[in-house]
Image (tube, rainbow, N blue to C red; front, side):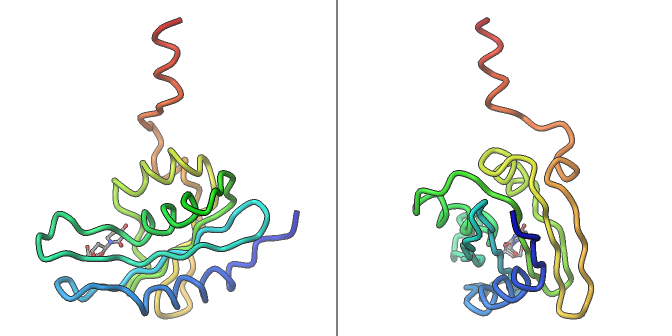
Length: 135
Ligand code: THU
């Protein structure tokens, strides 16, 4: 398997952030989700006038990949103005759909942080474990 190129993820996530619909927060976020076979799916945050309906960049990238039939992932790159980590809701969805993958955080400068999704959600609610209850 080829080495992950964080720069490619940064470029894709930064490009996606340019399409953010964030008139309320003015905080654009872009996400680039890398599949096991090297494809990248992008997402940006999409805000709504009823604020709670806002969907984060990470979950939109995951939804785009799922719609395309993707099931196996390697990494997600997230670009935001200050290189912030994903919110709690996104951590759960990253865990559920992607499992333990690399997470790269990018900001407008040269800062890059590399984490694992298991570090971001150390004690996850895990749907697979629910099956154990019946056994
Ligand atoms: N946001 C994301 O896109 N991802 C996150 O993980 C945290 C927050 C968005 C939601 C909202 O549009 C803006 O950032 C400010 O919270």
